[in-house]
Image 1 (tube, one colour):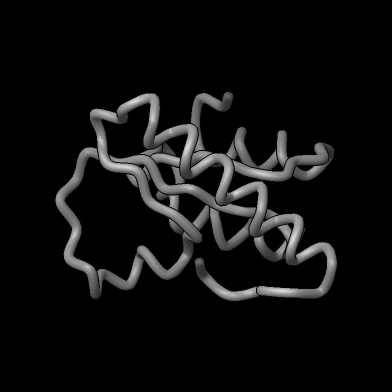
Image 2: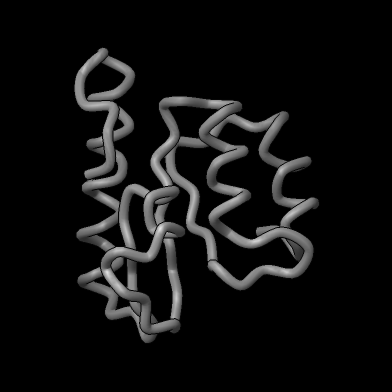
Length: 101
């Protein structure tokens, strides 16, 4: 976990992560900017937006994420997206799907 966007980026740089969950409204940097930084550092990473905001499907901020979970989050939805995010990361590592899922 990270208390703000800057801390999240600093923590990520030294880590080895398969999937990250980000809120769109984070102090310091918004979640979509953080997601883009993570993707630059690790093109294989799967990113999941968790938000309570009602976003239009064409909201450009969504393009920074592979998946989206709407708050409140049901356990089954979390498990489903986590499984899909890990699968996407694995496909990217094998040279497969590199686009948004």
